[in-house]
Every structure is written in structure tokens, then in C-alpha cells.
Image (cartoon, rainbow, N blue to C red; front, side, top):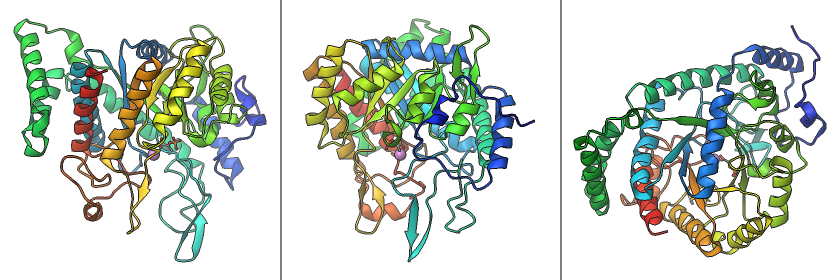
Length: 446
Ligand code: PEP
Ligand code: CO
């Protein structure tokens, strides 16, 4: 039954909402959101609370966050193999980082809900034909036809189903022994056997000795066998995110049950806008993407709105400033927020400020530039005396050729081989592992 009931978190409807699809069929939209409201939650309030506590420990320097996954998940690629390879890549990176940082690694996937994309332009033009932009499988279809690009509310229900089946598989993989640190480490041995990555062999050998030591000492505890992998996505589509927001039976507080961690993108982070208004009402840990254009005042206004009391772990700033800007732009922001005193967890997204187009028209990123931004992030925190809390990257478990560079010297010509992303270029499996080794070295030196 469709009702006109309003909910305590519906204040966003009175605010400016950027990047929303214009659905021609509003009746169908109301049917869909009403159906979503009666579906079971995808994640549970207690899990979101646990993650918030862990984000707080990363903010203090007692843990490090690894967030990674697709720029845009697609329905077609939500398959057992693709999910398994992505999880495997995140877990392999986490083992290297755990050793390098001597800290617990908080593992968060851009997975099981990352189906909607903000776009710089409402229209896409090809050969003189202009059609509405692709906004992710949760909104419309990538095919370049008039019909495919019409926003279809049914896709919100499809996103729910795909997210639910992904989460089911993720829970099975991470709780069933597949993610055992000893298996994951054995996969990493394969990586360093490749001569291109010989320089990481010494670190891999150290990890190997540590794992052997634990085995010999009989450290056969659950902690090695079972891992927590949390789910995160950009909370972009307000109708979906609001329909998945629920009252927690334990204490009457509100939680967004579509994912454990939700972030607000660079294009929708207006402190007075609808996205901030909706996430302001929920208890989940939330993030905001921060580009080189943000001022200290912008950040404080976001803190006032999203975390006025300064609860640790509640708010994460994910900086994506570009390698050439970060060393100038980040330190003053870190100083200003340090002076404010309310805790923030700082995470580096070295991907979104470093996208380039090749002469042949491919959207790519250079591995060295990505690493340069990560280094700039660590340097800025060292300078300000603040804590670099984690890494947020776009990756896939497959051998795609979308990002150039890295020790295998992937060049522009090879972009044609396996360029599969529908939106932003992702690190492939090997590049992701290489980044983990490089960041492990950086953390050790911090
Ligand atoms: C993204 O994370 O895919 C994205 C669009 O990021 P941003 O909002 O930082 O541009
Ligand atoms: Co992206």
C-alpha cells in the first residue's frame, strides 16, 4: 500500500538535492520506495556501531582503514567470481598493511550498494547526439539509446536485490574460513614471485616469517580465520537511502540500513543541502569527500551539521585533492580542524583528484601520481601532527588495464586491452597489491 506517511528523517525533502534522477514515472517511484521500506535491512545497527567504534580508533592512530572497490558496481558484474576476486584483493592488501603498520586494518568495501554515480554533466554527447548521462545501474542503463537512459525506479529494487545477494556472499566468504590469513598470505607469495615486484620480496619474506611464527606458536585463534568486511557506498540517491533508513528497535535511533558506512560525494556536500540533511539524522559512521576547493570554514560547517558534539568515529573526511595540490591545501585544513578540537578521521582518496584523459580519449590515472598523492597525504599529517587514518581506492580483482604505470609499466597503448570500467579507471589486482606494499613502507616510516 502506498501512503503519504512522512518520517522523522524526511527533512531532506525541503532542501536542495543535487544529482537526483528525474523520474518520469513518479507513481512507480512511490510504489518502489514503499516496497523498499518493508524489505529487511541489509546491514544491522549493531554492526554500524562497531564500525563507528573502529573508525574512531583509526582517528586516534590505533588502526588503519582500507576502503576499496569499484567506482561503479554494475548488475551485470555482480557475480560470484567478481565479488570473490575483489574481496581477495582487499584481504591480500590488508595482510600486507597489517604487518607494515603493526595495526589492525579496518576493511571496508565499495561494494554491495555502489550502483549510483554523480556526473559532472547531465547530458552526454556522442557524434552530435545528446542523451541523458549514465548515472549508474541504480538509475539507468549504460547503452547509448534514448530508452536506455530514462531513469527507471524499478532499478532501485534491483539494487536492493543485488546488494543483498552480494552481502550474503561476502558474509559467507569472510566468516567461513575462506579469508583465513594463512590462505591470504599464500596468495601474496604468488604476487612477489613475479620479477616485476622483486623489490617487495624482502617485506613479503618478513611477513612469511611472522605467519610461520604464529603457526609454530600455535596462534590458531579465530582472529586469523574470520574477518569483518564492512560495506560502504556513496549515499547519492535520496529516495533509496531514505527508504532504507529505519528506527533501531534497541533504542529508537535512526540508522541507514543500506550499508555500514555512507559517504557524501564532492558534488553533494553542501552543508545546507539534502544529502547532509539526511545523513545528519542517522547514527552510522559517515564520510564526506573533500577536494582542493574546500575551505576550513566548509569543513567546520560540515562538522556542525554532521557531528556537532564531536563523537569520535562518526565523521570521516576523505581527501581527494590531486597530487599537485595536496601538500599546499591539506596542511592548513588539518591545522584548523586540530584547533577546533572535535575529532575527525582522515582518509586519503588518491584517485579522484588525479584523473586524466589520453590523446586517444581514455580516462585514466597514473600509478605514480596516485602514489604521489598518498605520500603527500602522509607528509601533510606529519607536518600538522595529525593522524593519517586510512586509504580509499578504486580497485578490482581482475587483470584490467585502466590505470597506467606501476612496476609492470602498463602504458597507454595497453588501455585498449581490458578497459572495462563504465565510469572511473580502477587499479587492477597487481597494482592494488603493489600499492599495499608501498603504503606499508610509508606507514612504517611515519
Ligand atoms: C567516487 O568516489 O566515485 C566519486 C565520484 O568521488 P568524488 O565525489 O570524490 O568525486
Ligand atoms: Co570514481
